[in-house]
Image 1: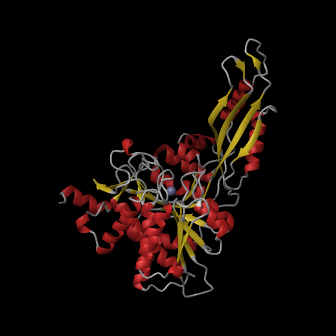
Image 2: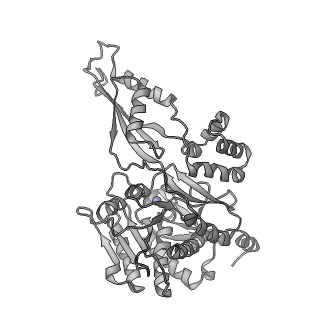
Image 3: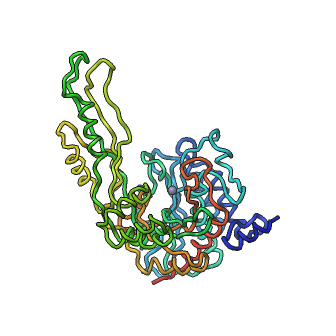
Length: 468
Ligand SMILES: [Zn+2]
């Protein structure tokens, strides 16, 4: 039963529909979402292939022929497979649109969580469970959209493709998006792709602050700093000590700031967020958007780790190891430097900068485990992309600004953009200011956010599928 306060909140904020008030199509969608969350897809003990098979079965039941459902696995990775599904379009000359989603989730230990992470629990206006937010709500919305379009006999000019992948959450794991880009480029070919990344932001009271659409992202790159030395007995110290060299180099890196960089997305982000955020931070955003040399604005923005991350390339030490015995001069000292590189800058350029900053020929700097390199400018936010988002959002969240975003973190867009598929992050799922426990404990998403986001994605996909 709803209280008066509950009813008022629901009316003003579109807060959760209770189980009793769900439409029949929402009941079915909820079951799909539940099935996905309750299918463990962690790297350690889960099975992405199983999740893909379950989603394919729903599509088949909705009328998709086997020829339109491609379950794939790579040799040696039987549980890290995925699914590509295709709803053909009427115009063979029109390029497809691609709906991308990873089904894998970050590890979750039952002992640490308040509730079972692999049971979808609805409580206090939230869905709880690993992947509820990142990103099984959106994956469920993609599958559900394909089912509804098929059942409705929707006439789409462009083909609508969906690629579900595994391995997004673990940088060292097999990555399905990378594999598809390398092995099934034709199958996933599209004018553009929609992916996770952009989302809605709520303020502390649960009021929509902005709907972001992600265009571009920084890319992660690790560098090893390594000093070797002949070593010797610690009773015979020499000034040339591997640990001193490495420590001095790290201190110089800590004091170094990479130059400020901007692009269309970051300037628009600060411009549009300024009035929403307000106060000193809002003023700094507005000032920086006008003048990217404004030192005061930069120092205010830099004080927030999230905003600092999109102002420039950043590099920080994350791992350190040195020496081999407590009575020996160190023969080796090394550190891992994790950089988040602003698009347009190369792995080599950052390496050159690190070499110049440490200014010590004894410190060897190597780029390690190169994953992806987004050297291209972010995909443009053309009216073709933005207008449908604005129109549909205006109906569901009137007055909420659409804000372009370049993400400081990384998504699978990093694998599609380099092979010529512009990829945008658009989820329509509004999250809380604290990050919703994504990758952490008690991951959750507001019930109302899930249903509204699903409606939003369905409508937007329909418009894109028939756009010129
Ligand atoms: Zn994710």
